[in-house]
Length: 338
Ligand SMILES: Nc1ncnc2c1ncn2[C@@H]1O[C@H](COP(=O)(O)OP(=O)(O)O)[C@@H](O)[C@H]1O
Ligand SMILES: [Mg+2]
Image (cartoon, rainbow, N blue to C red; front, side, top):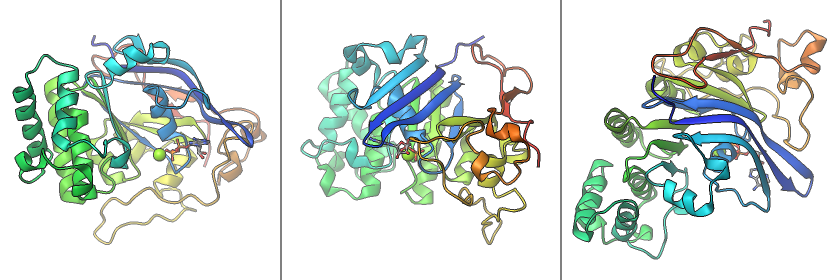
């Protein structure tokens, strides 16, 4: 049995807003095994970004109340001291956001930022770190990596900056990598190159990956498991094959465009589309419905219990090889009818 890299238990995040408390993440539990890729999908506002920012202590404490447990290699991220958390980011957990400027320091050269990242967590000489930095920039596909080291973020294009951020996140071969729409703005060739790189890291170091994306092609290509979020909850969690081919929850079926009433935007060559648009709007986190969080938009709701009870996450089948802890795979809502 290999222990999971990350185990999240009953994660809840409440944000203080002018309209009262926003219940943005509402009891999220999942695990990521070594070398495993968990794709997180769900429309905008479902709490995907907030849930991963909470894991790394990146939400302002005056605004956010975070509860639950998030064990990174057995150590709870949510009760760690700020100092320990800083040590853990890098070798423990790396994160890549969609907007590279949130992660880069505009006044430091690319080389300096990479070298600092590499040296902060390892006993490496300055020259060694610079060589490693150039290698990494080459691996993420930056042309002329040596010269790139001396450039500043504003001198690079958006796509190149994003590749630098990815290089920094990968620099310490983290146990956990979180990618939040990390390759969305990159062209497909570069995206494929980054995905190869991440898969190489997983094979070499057993890195567990959380990949937030709205791109079903990426999900089908890289995910082992898919977690579907709606209204700050996980409504479905299963193997990539189960979720894409036999989605159980009506919301998942809507996103995949496989619910008859919801049209699917299929590509002209049959390529996998982005997630479909589900009619209606998600509930504001300041005013979540009772019962199943999806019922006000659900095309197959039929039973009064939808408005009063949360559908259970049904367990289908035992855990996969080598995973303990939350090792059972969940499937949402065989409960829902259609
Ligand atoms: N700083 C904030 N203050 C108040 N509400 C926020 C803040 N950040 C996010 N939210 C709200 O939290 C919810 C989830 O946001 P987010 O995690 O960014 O969604 P996703 O990444 O799934 O699109 C949204 O309703 C959003 O409006
Ligand atoms: Mg987001």
